[in-house]
Amino acid sequence: MDLSINGQIKQYQDKITVEQLLRLSGISPGQVVIELNASILSPDLHNKTVLKHGDTIELIQFVGGG
Image (cartoon, rainbow, N blue to C red; front, side):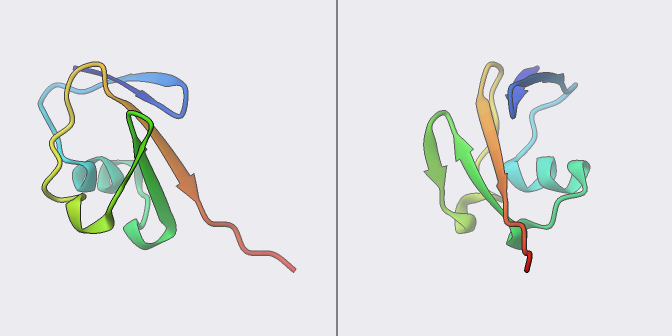
């Protein structure tokens, strides 16, 4: 299954949820906003949303600074 993640094509063997994708990527769910196919995905749907071949995901991370 091919997914476009932040403009890069990544391949996965099996279908995965958004939550699984975040874990595989080493990203804390509380520090990112997920845009799936041009729509913001509510955090309570991360573990229920199964990604499909060809999905486009943008991971928008919060960065602190001073």
